[in-house]
Image 1 (cartoon, rainbow, N blue to C red):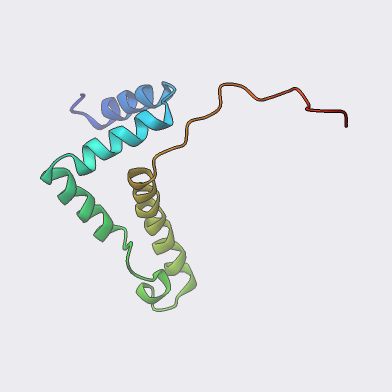
Image 2: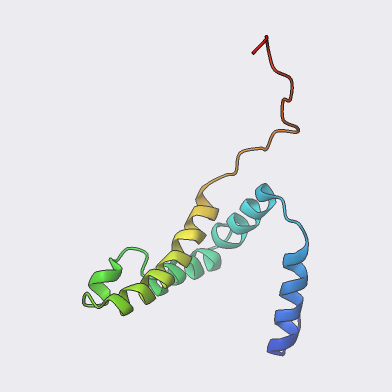
Length: 103
């Protein structure tokens, strides 16, 4: 991994371009966030930073612009939790193109 920000972002972009299987992504996220105490602490910190358990409107004192900002932060936490907690279903190999019976 590169130490400079531009190099790191380029490496991450290259890694993201590789097609990733949804099951592998799920397993990777679980290994990173639930596979160690450090990972659990980091996930807990992310959940605090993204206000996952707090209403965005309440955080923003019902200001619509602040609410939208906090909703954006909160959506990151929700997406992370969905990836970590929802094992993807296997996709069918191919679609059944044959019709059964006469239509």
